[in-house]
Length: 92
Image (cartoon, rainbow, N blue to C red; front, side, top):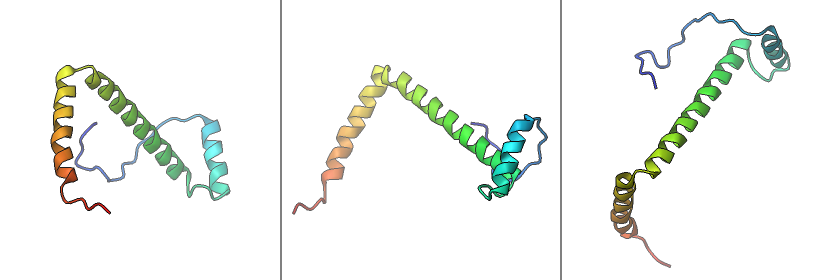
C-alpha cells in the first residue's frame, strides 16, 4: 500500500476510458443510481483496490500458513489468550 499525506484529499487526474464505459456511467447517472460519472469511477476504483487488497492478504496468509514458526507463534498466542478470554465469563 502506498502511503500518502493526502490520503482523503481529492486529486484531479486525467485518464482515458472506453466510450462505452462512460455511456454506461451516464446511464446510471440519468437513472439516479449514482450521483455522477466521477462518483461511479471513484466507486469502481475503490472496489477494485479493496478486492486487490483482499487477494494480497489471502496470498500472504497462504504463505504464512506454510511457515512453521508463524503457525507456532499464532497457536501459542491463541492458547494464551484463550485463558484471558475465559476469565470473567458468567455461565448461566
